[in-house]
Length: 298
Picture 1 (cartoon, one colour):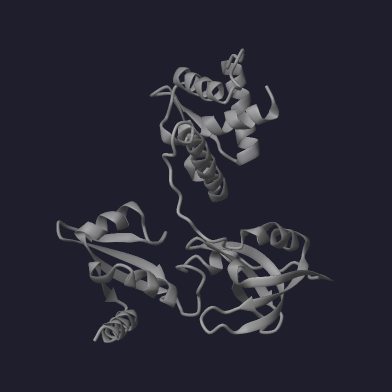
Picture 2 (cartoon, rainbow, N blue to C red; picture 1 turned 90 degrees about the vertical axis):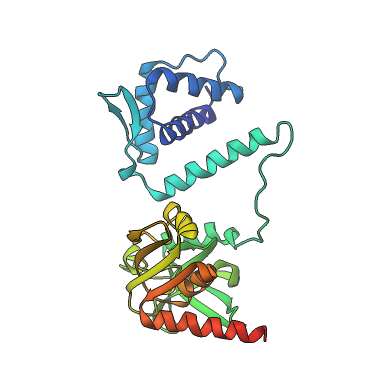
């Protein structure tokens, strides 16, 4: 089997076990059917010994560990050990395969039409991060259209709200700052290298909704209508989300976040379906924005 066949087989195994714990017989049939659809399954016998090798390769390549439940006699994935980047890759693969199937007769999947979010910069920026090259670029602030020239030490790449950001040490302000890929032009690699910097990016942004961290994180309590609450329960606003009460008429949740413009804009999206209980500062901010909105229509 060609190398592409090996990788597709691994991904079909992962995709299946993510969906439902499966015994070897059903997994065997699932994998062969998928490979046959790709014209990769002819004359291929998927044995238990091959599956044992696949489990080891999947663990080595993706850090995904397949375990066996002796009680139910099914295989499953230990999701606690799975890297989020791997989950995103599996998700992209599943969408890609579904789209291939959907176009065989007539289109069945329709994607949102979005402008480029600057992802063409990703490989270059990643190379600079890994090899400690300083970068210079032109940056445009969308808020006031201020255009500045920046020289930075790139540290990481972060995603937020379908946008990508460069997290970097700004040489001018001597601070860690965020630069949206879609606001970067004239990106240049400098010959100047920098010493590796120890910055815990995950810790820095663990209480952020988006990329803003200019205020101290604090407890935020929100009350949603029961209709909107169903969406919030199925797709939490943030990893810190906790349900305080859940009744027939409302859902009350607690978050621990930096109360920044990012979360304020998100809450405004829900209109009258959400009420801010705490903190008072965020409650007043939303109230004053609502008053300004009303003025636009008077």
